[in-house]
Image 1 (tube, one colour):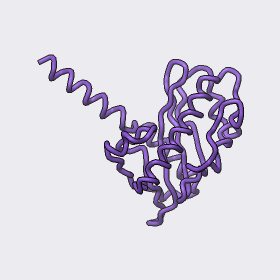
Image 2 (tube, rainbow, N blue to C red):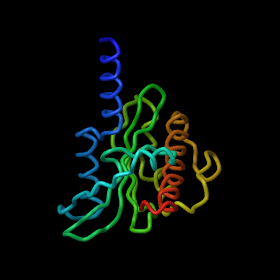
Image 3 (cartoon, helix red, strand yellow):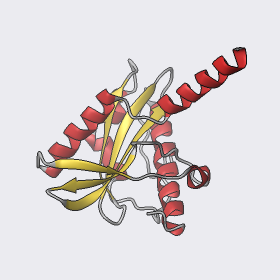
Image 4 (cartoon, helix red, strand yellow):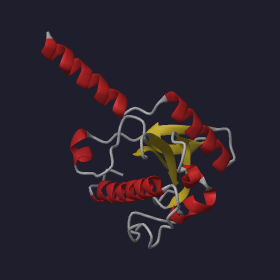
Length: 176
């Protein structure tokens, strides 16, 4: 009986860990509507098999990597991620064009008292124009540090590097 409970617990944790919470999905949708300046936005989920996911650095779950469709036309890609901060996590959105060049990014939910400065458009614009073949992001070199947000800055920098490497792997394996 204890084994069954443990397996059920682990299975439910894994399911929750790979799903985008409703409130995060709603904020992401609202941000996409604003960025693309149209109410008619839908997502087409890109499924990444367990085998392919094991070869990537980022985790691709049921809902966090998707094609963005507007009025029946493919307009780009999106990714919703979750990154650690000092004592909690934060959720973020990355939008790409059709060639996986970063066109927009946004911290959707930041759960810490300090470090929220990473949400500023001015700071986030450092990632714009990046692609899977771009130079790696390096803290205090091509990514500006923020006093009081060091952990969050390093975390998002690491997450963006992982995402770009993972997309490059999926492209190389012809999964995208």
